[in-house]
Length: 306
Length: 269
Image (tube, rainbow over all chains, first blue to last red; front, side, top):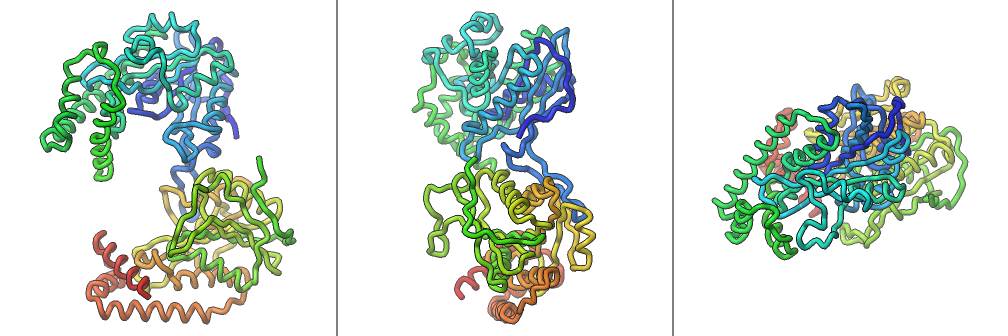
């Protein structure tokens, strides 16, 4: 088990960005878009077989040519005298038992990622994911930021369109970041390495949707590019966001028209359309459960039909 | 790491081949082939794999009214050139499981070649001959097995556990082949004696086992006779099998109907 490096670039004071699949693929789409736009070069990978099952076998002419696993790759790029490292994982290790990464394998992979970070003089790690909130899909998502050190709180406060847990009503500065995004923050803290998780908001009624949520990714990218003091072309993400928004509108309309969901659920969702995110109180578990019971079922139905 | 193997004996081998079969298989092919080999060779289990970590041990599954429990055993016999393994596919930590099997095979048994056995569901009629599709992990081994009537497989998609094992063997430099016998889709849920015989014929030739096929031939005749009676009683079954015999394809609904009728017929006995 280990890390395979194809080359060892000389990096100084580097910043690492990590992305994995998760709700709405907000984090991975943000980080991978940044990596792609900057043209970062691949320089290594985590050998996947101890963490993931193979996805595909290639057999040609009676010979086993390849067994393909989810990839976990490292990339680097120098931008305006800043050395950047990207880690893109195609899957989170779940050990087959849970939806999100947890347990020994998740801890091992978090440590391997940070081994590479430290080997290449990384001083700051950013992870990215989704914040499930009471936002409407037509509203601009905010970015929730969680640093792993009190020293970073003031810096995070300067980020635009970003909020800390203490600024969210009802949260009492508390919460949980599931999966590797959270775990990496913790393991980095244990190693004395600065890390911040930036999470783009996604409407709670879309958390199980089969679509990505590019609006959330865009909000995350706006924060990250400000931090790096660069500007990048986000037009592809805008187009995708527009297309997803239209699909969501169409899907909800069809549910309302066919009365597939109760009118009270429809009213709850529609109420959000005209409310600023900052005005919204926290979602009670009961409210969320009521809505999700219906919507999740419909998404599952759509998946099995598709 | 805790040792997952529990040895009950320490047999000696001489450059053996390892034959691997799994309990769950289309047409019950690999468990039946392994049972047949073990019976002929009077093989005994010499090692088992502890299930902890690889299987859900929150209870037991019930199949055919009987409680089941995962069993993964290696068998040996007087034939020092053969090691046999039969097991249940692990639910968790598949890489570790397969790597441990390869490790034991390589270091404790010093195997020379690996053979995995499996059934592959095919849109053929039961009256057709069964092809054996082969996947090798070394080109040299592929050349050595020319002359056994194997056909080269082409496939790109989700891997079966046999392909995964073949890959772990390849990484260790162990020559391996997966033998996939075609199973008519409507016999996949039951037993396909013709496919079982087809695989055994190859193993018989390769390892000079001198197998007696009398009982198996009887089972094939009996199965074919029963399907012939079902065809007489059910026009749709006759029509669908006739189409397959004429190499015409069936729609998904027709395939499901044929499978259901044949499976229910054999379940009734």
